[in-house]
Amino acid sequence: MTAFAEFRPVMLVTGLLVATLGFAMLLPALVDIAADNDDWMIFASSGTITMLVGLALFAANRGIPKGLSTRQAMLMTVVSWVTLIAFGALPFQWSGVVPSYTDAFFESMSGLTTTGATVITGLDYAPPGILFWRGLLQWLGGLGIIVMAIAVLPMLQIGGMQLFKAEAFDTAEKILPRATQISTSITLVFIAMTGICAVAYMAVGMAADDALIHAMTTVATGGFSTKDASIGHFQNAGVEWIAVVFMVLGSIPFILYVQMLQGRFRPIIRDEQVKAFMSFLGVAVVAGWMMAHFSGNHIGLEGLRHSAFNVISIVTGTGYASTDYGLWGPHAVGFFFIIMFVGGCAGSTSCGIKIFRFQVLIEGVRQHVSQVMYPHGVFRAHFNGKPIQDRVIASVMSFFFLFMASFVVLSILLRLTGLDTLSSLSGAGTALSNVGPGLGDIIGPAGNFQSLSDIQKWLLSAGMLLGRLELFTVLVLFLPRFWRS
Image (cartoon, rainbow, N blue to C red; front, side):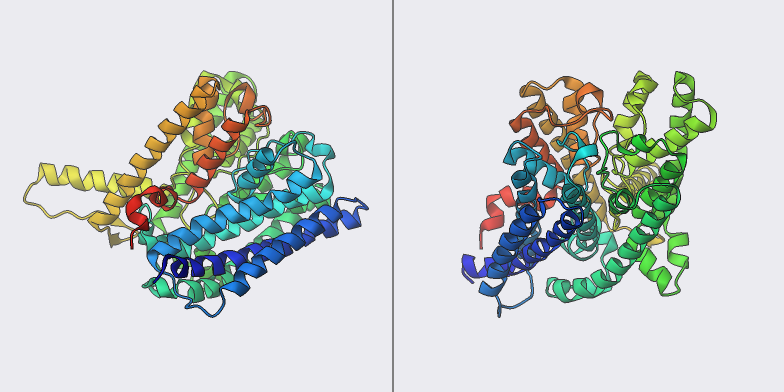
């Protein structure tokens, strides 16, 4: 097979996805038309160009075998995401809400990777179509992430994700047809959850447009808001508690919701990953509550609310903020810096390292310690009641090493560009973990990424993509061996 022929299935899938994104651009055009805003022409032209390019790619590669090899699946994942992000930036650039394509690409990257870092200021007065497009980007990105985590990453054995390999994905050739079937069920659950969240927001006093956009970014654990002050703008305890509930729901494997609709409730109750995630959130919220209380910023139940909201927002990678938790003391800065790496469950919209990898790591260490203490004993690590293969443990450990190495390298590069140490460290962490806000005065919960230089924004964009696609998928493309036949 020639190199071009091998690339054609990648272009086929990418073309279909790009055409879909172009069609999605017509929705904010309708929003602008309803608001009597001339920006509808920007979305109409962006959508038309994007659809034409996507359909051209799709039409030029029709009639080829629809199976994907492992190499093609890896290449398809990276190429499709980068292409979608590049086209998703067009409305930001052409509308003039950002001064350059660098800013537009950063915003689009942050949207589709559900990171939530923004370079746009004056959100309170931004055009309605742009606000809706930001929310829709995160909603589409969140849905795409779930399908990728269920259908593609387990087959590629990325970072221990093979633990979640469904029986229907035994071979690479089954990815496309089976992913189409399972994504339909997940999409219906995703739409229903978004609708319920929007209605709940409206029930506590949020305007309909704000409610819909925040529902999309809450369920997708993305964190884009329609206000510069994020959720803190509304000063509404009901809004914050609703966000807490749906941020948690968005961080639980969506396949478990599909099973619930099929009448199978036992999996979600007995899932070790879900139990560990909820337990960690409980401990972290209490710790945050104590910090808020003793700092004197938020006392009593108000402190509990702010702790629950901000801790869960950071752990799940949503990135909303209701207050500047950097004011809770230097220990709070270290606390939030650590928990931003944790993440939610695999198969959800959440990001970060993810809970299951910590569980596998602990099980691997326990197995090794037991083997050292009792050399003649037989010990096996387990996850969800099933033995963990040694190659899975090795894969998870490799992921941890690569994640930390990427964090160190990105932090150093940001520091070399002139960014201060705290912003460099937290910027690298929030990009790789796809959280959104960093720490400090510049990119902290009360700040914005707009003042960063172009090179810093490109570095952070690369970090967001690297973290969202689970490191290996991107980095393997830089190995010469990957391109050899």
